[in-house]
Image 1 (cartoon, one colour):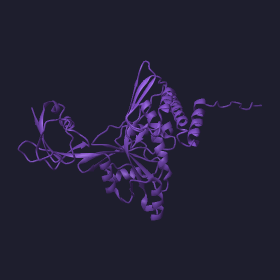
Image 2 (cartoon, one colour):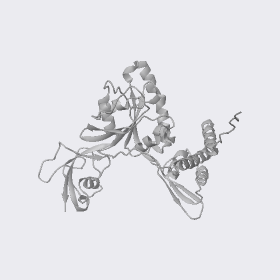
Image 3 (spheres, rainbow, N blue to C red):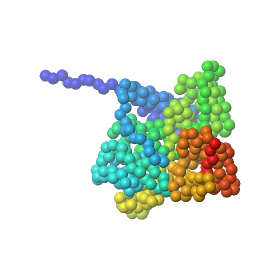
Length: 374
């Protein structure tokens, strides 16, 4: 007679504690009385998740997708399986990504190039993500690793599954990617002694100094000088302490708009507030999406002019917004910034052909630049 299997699966105490803290946070109403406790819960949760990640990746060599960045910007199409990413990639570019009416058509990263206003923008169609992607489900870690190197994330949402947007947001957040945010203006310098000294240049409304001190101690920071220059939250403080976050711009695109009535479309739009509604299959609003991608990447065009010659107004140099003369010199040739003498600028300058000697001069879209070198 066979003995019954009496093996009892051991509970992971770290997982149990994470679940317990997540429940506490979700049930706690945030106000001045509870902000201290919630801040501590969040710090404890972040520390446990980091411990869990370190343990799960210990001794494992992560398999990722090798994607070389090319062009004037990189956009990743992110969505659940069968949302229409491959169809959209083909509509935006000439990539000819495999298209099928079933899940998991895309098994590798497929690149394409969007040509818009002289900019060559790399579009990456990655495998569809699923719930638990950040924890490794469905090769999710590899997919999300591609996002960390992108300049823009395009969340593609199926009109029949608006709930997927929140799920994608959560997975991306858990992968330490912050969408449409900037790094908090907070500086933490650890010291040998003296306790925690906090200096602020703004009024803190989301977190108080006592909570900040307690949260830092939870991260084993007992002596430090902290300078805070913006009104931060507990989550932002954790991001600064961990120091491994990536800040990327994002667009929300609702697909298959042609498959529902206007009333239903408006209802879904009210839930997720998309930047644009499209039909990748019917090519509806694709031109509008191209322009949105271009604007969100904050690309500017700089026209070059040689001395005593007309400016080349056909092929601009593609640069990022806030680029300077030094950035332009470096993009043209590594020695140009050292040989820079002055520039004449038409467009954003105070008067046409203004003589500019400072390399930190900020360029604007459609500026005409004549460089003079030593």
